[in-house]
Length: 508
Image 1 (cartoon, helix red, strand yellow):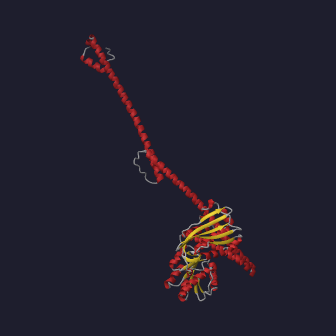
Image 2 (image 1 turned 30 degrees about the vertical axis):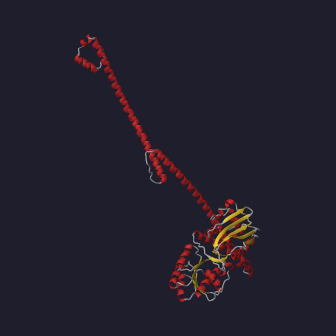
């Protein structure tokens, strides 16, 4: 047994209990201790290896643990960013069944991104539409400015020429042009007002008995001059079975037909415009018929059919410059037909012409005594109103002079108040049958004057003769006691008709 290599624990035990001589003299005992010594040494090495292994495991575990914490932190950071991204997209709190599931978060984020993309696509389309609408409105305003300035230019220019020439022949030569220019300007303003009324939902359809055949004849007659300018002819073709005595709104139906015929005249040269009516069906109470306005004009491309019925739109931007017009006629006609539970149809071919048509279902009547005549002011015969006493409330001296001259043609006795306060004072001491009331005046406007007069007399007819065409103002006037209104520039025949109506009512 080698004492240098013996394990210290074993060596202590041997030295404590056995002598060296005993071990040296006993070979078997020495070999036994060699084996035991090897066991001690093996155990020592195993323990050292175990300790080293444990130490290495602790180090490795620490590294792995730190790495796991780092990965977990990364995951939480990613998750937090995903949740924030979703919240930014959705502008709301994100609710998850399991917030630790990154796949769920990614799916939600993907859905939100897709939703946001669709929303942004819609915004982009809306932006384009808004830009196109704005461009269309700008084009419309430019067209309207052109259309308004054209007749004004003729009016102002001819008045200047007449002043310079100062002769009867000059007056007679230019009066028709002045009249034509003023009428065009008046019709244009009426189109704008009607469009405004329709957009605001302020048009009601009246039910009045009238002769549609007679109305169409009057329309054709009134548009003959315009048709002749383009070397066109207007032709009326009526179904022999057609029942002309109907109950509807003659003003609106006349407006629709006039717009469509005027449109056909504008886009036709050396051609024919036909107003055609076909009876479709008739029962005990209602008549169903189809009205067609057929022309041999330039025609319209099929892909432009919808566009020409949109507000502020025409088939081409060059259309207005070449043919003129406000671009409102077809829009107004379509909207009026909707109020009549109908719609406008269009058939057209480039170079051959167009056919605008609509079908109406309306009540009809057989008793001719129900018939209302004088549907259009064109053929209305002005009546002498001698004995009628009118208080004219108007602050503009030119308008006063015009109104006095017109009223004098019918032998009306007129007194003038230059504002509402004077009108109230004059009414208290004067005797009047009707009051013509301007609305916008200094000192006291027409609204306050109406309230004051109505407080004293709820019965006297008050007609607003005003340039305030906004429906907010007109509704306010009706609520305060105005019986009805006439918009400036006014048609003298309309004024005569309304004065006659109220004057006869007061006499009755």
